[in-house]
Image (cartoon, rainbow, N blue to C red; front, side):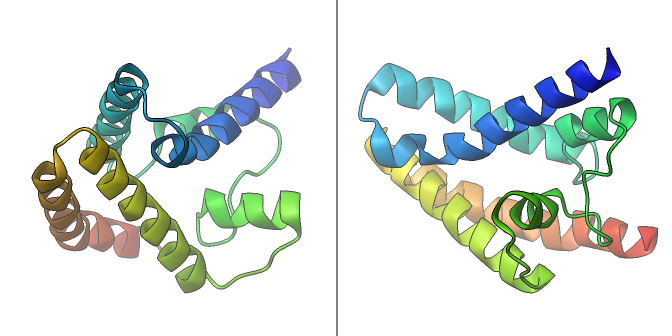
Amino acid sequence: MLNVVETLLEIVHGIIFLMILIPFVFNNRIILLAYFYFLLSIYIGWIVFNGRCWLSMLESKYGDDKIMDDNGNTLQYRLKKYFNLELSEKTVQIIYWLVNYLAILVLCYKLNRLTFGIIWIVVWTLFDQKYLKPLKINKL
């Protein structure tokens, strides 16, 4: 039963990773608004759980397999597992945040909320640097 739960959680996580493409592919306002609020909930989850993804936490709890690399990075782990890509942690972070921030800007532009998107990115970056990065360093 746990293997089924683990597989299901991994599929859901993969779908969520791919949802980053929504702002680039869709122009339907309802879809974009739904994704906007979904994305906000993800960021709120990172704040509530000190920079950790609640879905990754469930995967770690219910899965038999290790879902993170040695640095606690699930994206880096998945890139290696599914695409056999071994990138440095810094490279993965740069690519991830570049794509993520670009998706936020495109999303907010399409929803006529570009100013909100810029503020979101600035506030998140400041919050991440001030509060979440020190927590991750202290855990190592």
